[in-house]
Image (cartoon, rainbow, N blue to C red; front, side):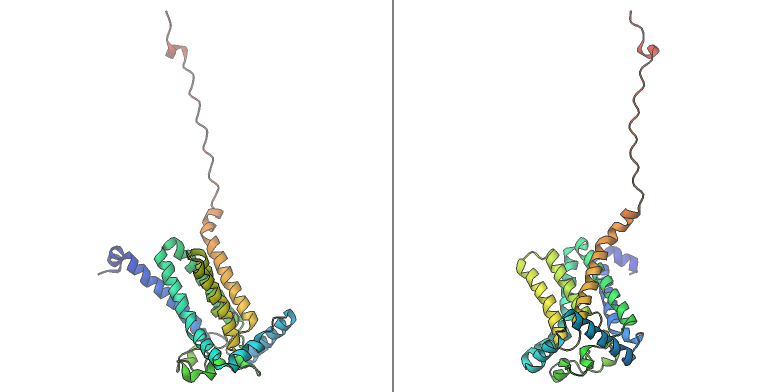
Length: 271
């Protein structure tokens, strides 16, 4: 059966497969950006220290107490490690599937926002590779502490043996935080129950705490991660309006011409 015939007979299946391919492409680009990104540790460490100084000026240098919390309490550290290594993918995929089932009018703008925000994040990874806190003396890599209890090794949250394919300098901005905010906004817009919407915002805030506490991101990474997804939503909202904004204004309809008065000949003579 040809692709055209398959598309005609099973349009939903074909569209679903294409959507899965697109999301997988985003994930591959996110995970394999190391192949084209600069891996020089010196500049990445310098950027990390600059971010740390900026946070100190702003008064948002909260990494140390959060990292100590996840390090000194084994249960919190283990739960945080599983949260970091799994929910980023599982929850995002589940919400995408739910939005897809709600229909194109709901799914398309949300998908567009996720794609735009992710591309912004990937661009930052290529331009500004930045070391995470766990590379800095004084911070603990919590996932590494619990590597024997999970499927990950010491290379971020990558499965054992695949650490070399991940970009460990993809810290600024945090797409873990960004994707979590995307989930919260999607649920806020389309979930019927208030508790589901509250759960989405709890997940977004919780993810921010987890990725800082496990030593994988700076506070500023989280805030900018939220920002790129917010920009993605804004762009997704404006994108459908662009053709309308650029189109020429519709011409006003001309008023109907008044019917000509009948001529004497047309009226005829009265006797």
